[in-house]
Image (cartoon, rainbow, N blue to C red; front, side, top):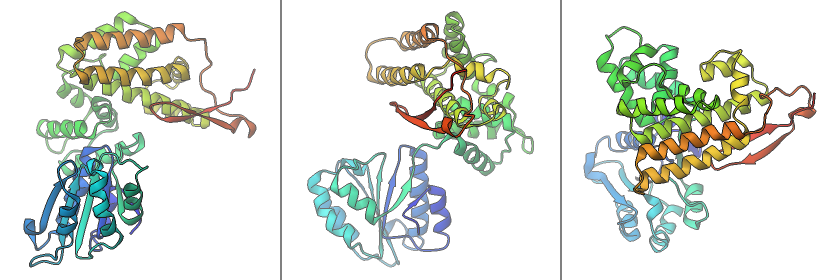
Length: 370
């Protein structure tokens, strides 16, 4: 079995072989971590049931208890399953007691460590990555969301038209849990056998046309402060949660950044237009309004506003979001005039420099002077 798998690769692998003694299920996407654990439980506890299943939490459990439990032989079954959730919260003292076990784990036990994010600088984390099969539960990239949505839709009896796929991704801002909820609503709304349309998605969201996150970014690109505030107000009045609006906007900005990067690398206007759902004749002008500095500053602002909305700073959420949107509009107004992203014309032009931001690492191609 490879050292790193996705949850769905894990599911396929376990159809052909027994579980390994050690797994590290790590990544920020809760839904993927839950799926991986469900797959492991279904395979490891075939005949022993919950009698051979033990669950610990890193901020409560003692390393000795976890080690002793994992060292026990299964009762009336072939395998035990021991799960440690929030493994990143295990103290250094507790991990010392587990270090020897992970070097020589019991074959009849499957020990699973689960974490949203591990500190890779710690010796225990490094040893665990080397010894365990890693199940990567990181947030899906934009290219992975479409296949995931199609698969999940089929499981609830839905067939999605391509525009509905785009609308769903936009509706949930890339959140798998949000997408799952939207699919569940659609399954009870759409007549069996009928394909799901973008209009169905919008109808269940309760958002009137012209108030999507795409409309919001277009208004920001044009510096239309009044329209930006109007779209925000319509979303809030329709019951959209402030954090969800922020997440959708941040997701759209990441998509814009990715499309800019792909166009510099040589992708066609039509491909970028399909990703952004806009006229191919307008896509370069639209992207040209989002300078690298704008995108980097926006990423920082998104983090700050996320903290304000979650931290109970006392500010009203609507005012916090209004200040954010007006700041984004001002970034467009005060930005120096830039050329739309262009494809490299020579081998020399393909040389790239890496620019690090607090959202992602992007590549920016060198532009040639006309």
